[in-house]
Image 1 (cartoon, rainbow, N blue to C red):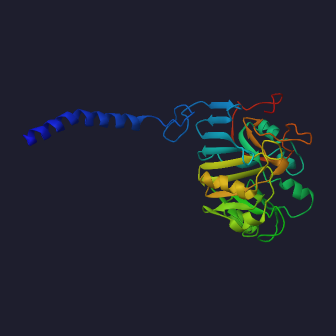
Image 2: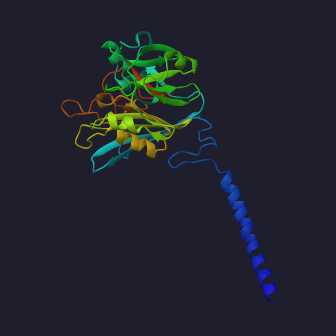
Length: 324
């Protein structure tokens, strides 16, 4: 009797098991569709066209194309009072971050507002760069600077110098790799021999090989101010964070607090860029962040020679459109 009951149970389960196999097969064949994006291919991009979402009220911005996907989320806390932007970027080969000069022929002397540089070159996503032109104009040590594979400057400070920025470096490679170094860890010749495309100098570097730079984070950037950081989760997968500061809704952050956010995002590499009035985050030609001027009103981040950007699109805002 027990044998017949077991056989009957198995027969009843067989249709359910078969249905389960069909359902599982259908799920596996569904295209990738992260929340908020249209259906994407198995690589996480669109097969054709572009997708753009801009929602300033909700604090969500998204972009997708055949080679680039971006999601930006504005976040905030009451204690401490803080507003910041977390950008997650996925990119295919040939669509990676690079320094974009306002005027390549006069790279270190011609300045423009960051959002206007983004509009000029139709840059999809950008943040501020290392503000190296200021150090060059002041005839001080600008750090190791490489742009488009050319060594531009090679005067730097020693490791963990008392100066801020301490001129640690971020090296960006044509295959999308990012690496960080102490200020004098490599020579100019070693940077060039590595095949680097751009080297930015500011610092400190915040994360290397998944480990926080405890000494650098303790020593530098302990005041509360606007901050900008760039990082790599893995090649082709990046994070950028901009923290607002010096206004009622956001007191600003230390570099160590910026590092905590980027570590939580999974960054294996993270680098501190220029902050204060230079800090900016730009999407489709519009400045997302609130930058207070001397009267407390929203203004553009200060003029710069470069931005650090990725992607191009004809849908980027043009001159005459609103800044935000």
